[in-house]
Image (cartoon, rainbow, N blue to C red; front, side):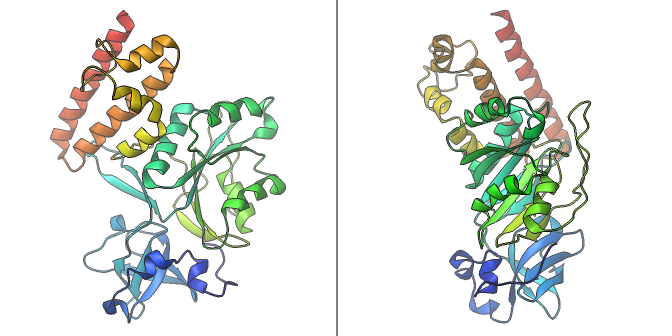
Length: 354
């Protein structure tokens, strides 16, 4: 965690405290202290308050799995126990790895999510859409940050592709992450009390950017030139104070972002296809070979991209599977996953026969 001093008149406000959280306090909290969670470990956490970082433990009805970096909690500073997590304004989570679908908290109370990729082989529209869906479903403003722009012949082409994904994306910026003047453009979203987070693959420059914004010196590693893949430099999620006000949540590069319970975000990102699907003849239309399919008609008419529709179908199918299997035992979850994959393969076969 970086920095512990405050210049704002209200030190809690500098950490993102707002009337939303103040309204959650009760008479029972009078002897407790509000703290912002800066890091989470298995048996302990670190809370940040006006007096700096404090080591915290979990009360009997809480565990590390319940607490996210960015959470506001009330704690008994005498016993060091976290007594309660205050209701969040936003929450980022993903499907944890493994057969049994379980949610893994990523971050809480984020205002802007910087989805970071590079102007090279790391750039992937389907992956960007996953992160945008995650943000939109959580009510977080998504922005796309394209690094390595100085190493690319035509960064404008990448900007155009990312911008075309959705008008819900608040900004698409192509920058050189090692140029402080270019990184400073991000401060427009990093004002006092604002919380931003960075997500994306390893090695795309997230830590370099955060170093500039915080004035810190985290270890960084360049991306591999042969396959545009990076090495992990951030190993755990953590909250940092930004120079000039605001906070940032740094997250390790994620190889997988399994979505769950984000149907609302998918419908927002793909709102044009969502509206078309409502016009299909059959309510359970799979948009593959059914008669009266408005989505297929739009593809044939050239008003919607077949590739984009396929990405939409895959996200909808994955979200449904992960949401359905959430909490199932291993045997039932594995059986349902096998059935899902068989159906997907059959549908791909139908498309290939056409």
